[in-house]
Image (cartoon, rainbow, N blue to C red; front, side, top):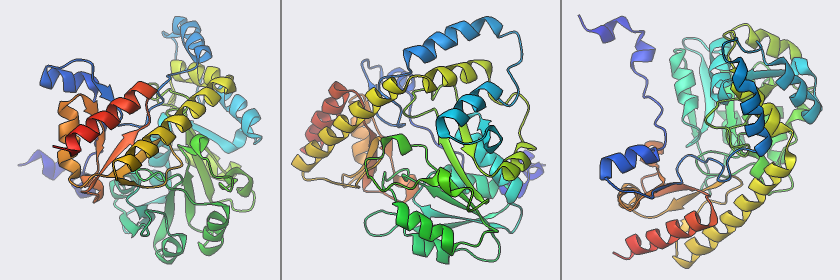
Length: 365
């Protein structure tokens, strides 16, 4: 008997999510020091001082279970977003919320539709429920084609995942395209607008998605504290939707799913918009420096509204490996079908320059 035979077939066939390589692992493997990680779209400045202060204050209560359903964080979010507390569901990162939505709305022989390449969790969420993952290719500029996305919706479609800005390309869709998608997709389909990077968006016509929930009760907006707020290590995200839909999804939530430290730090981070502004400004300047440097090298990259760039370097796997051996961790893209690309996160100014200098040296070899 094989143990694998005991596992549900749709779980057995899953390809696990591949995270960015940690600095500690690289330095242990290669015996090097001073490496930099520009692989996982993390905020270069780290958390707000107010978040760190809240962490310290909360650390004395770790023998107690956390507040279930994060009521105080929901209250703060509701005030900041100008929605009701009943519209909010908090999770252990937005990944947990994606999983909850999949468990609630997908079953065997159902379909989840999404653009591709996009966030790697979408096919995992679909296939873990025995559903079919319907991948719709991006257009020639690596942008989401909302018309093709809508056309891919069929009778068995239950969820449409939209990463906006899209990961791993950084491209985004504007208000007109977003609202056209909402009109074109039947209301029986849950549209999940995954906006992990929305704080970095530079375009002025980015969708005002929260204001559209009242018009479409099957629209859910996901956001996270892992990116601009710098709390990736604590895992806290949230979803906003119709109160009835949110209450139904919450039935599948595990108790105490957002830990005490995560709740406290998220509340502290939310109370410090000035820090968010600093992170955003630093990121935008870094993005401009990377774009300028890549143009000087004659390289093409996708127009990004996030804190990373998808760069065409020729031999993506080879360049990734050579940068890795020089202590510069980026993200290989072969798993997304982008063999000629790597993805690089905007870091601190000195990290951005080191990436450009190292890349130039490796390309000239």
